[in-house]
Length: 254
Image (tube, rainbow, N blue to C red; front, side, top):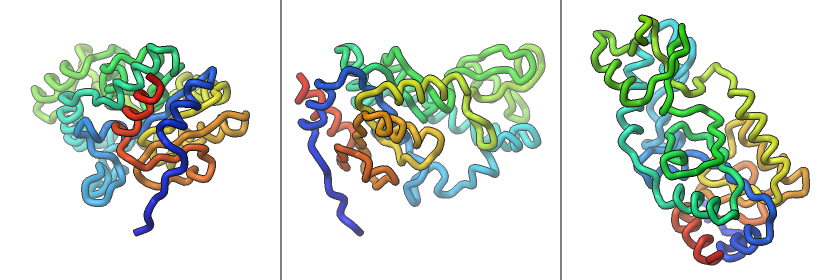
């Protein structure tokens, strides 16, 4: 196994953050693993390691076999509904409150950035926190959806109007919400520095955000344990645990 070598340090990243006028963060599944949420691709433990997402988390499955779809998503709701933000989420909040971070763009649907207190949050793939009715558009909160699903004979939660409720997340086969995507690319284009934290940078269009920053003269920093396709574009590349790395960055700034 190839040894991944850091480029730069937490102290150097802290200096870049202090010197930048506009800093944004892009986060992926790796920022939430310390909260007990598995990532998607780690062999044996990743969410999709033993399950075909196209067979359970695709929009066509929701429409054609909602009971199968909701068996999977009810488990997801139960798992994600009990987790708490970890220190990595909290460090980003502290950077935002200190005026060092303009916004967080996340690929995660776990709602942990919002629970931690991030105020400028762009959820590219939606959130489990809000689930709309497929007919009337009424919005239901996570706990209510879980109660309705557990009380249904087929496990499919129903709206008060009688139609099916769906998760407020982007499923396979669906487009990302254009408003959120447009805002994310706007932020990336204006950033002096983009912090890519816990993301494999393999899923597009989000994976293109660091390139937008770089093409417009900004700096890219990547903090994640595994190699990414954009490592060569990063001025700072740290492979350690993201919680420890962000703690070290915050300490160097303080």
